Amino acid sequence: MPFQMRDETAGVNILYVDNTNQMGLGSLPIAGQQLTVQGAGVVTIGGDFACGVLGVGATAPVEGSIAIPANSTATVPIVVSYIPTVGADAPAVAVSSSSVTFSNNTGATRTAHYSIW
Image (cartoon, rainbow, N blue to C red; front, side, top):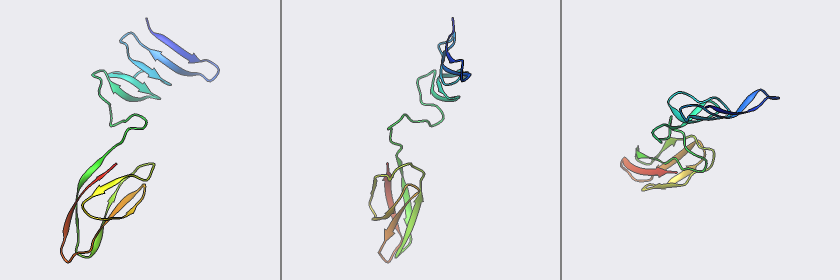
């Protein structure tokens, strides 16, 4: 038997559990998802995070390598809501919520390995 908690005044579902044990918060469940929030799948029936969604407070690390030209800088674009922590084998000369810029003060191109979280 499905269960539904609804705000009739606002006309919105607050919580809904259907006959297949799918649950929706703020919306009806989406087929193939174990948990949905406002119509977006969060956890699949297999228990995996769906669609790249992370929980509140989870870190989303960005790792990679970038070639920095001699006596120059190179920028890695990112999109985060806070100033991230950066670890790299080249100096990070500028860090913001939209990019990280690395510097190379040597006379040759340098490949820098970085981790941003």
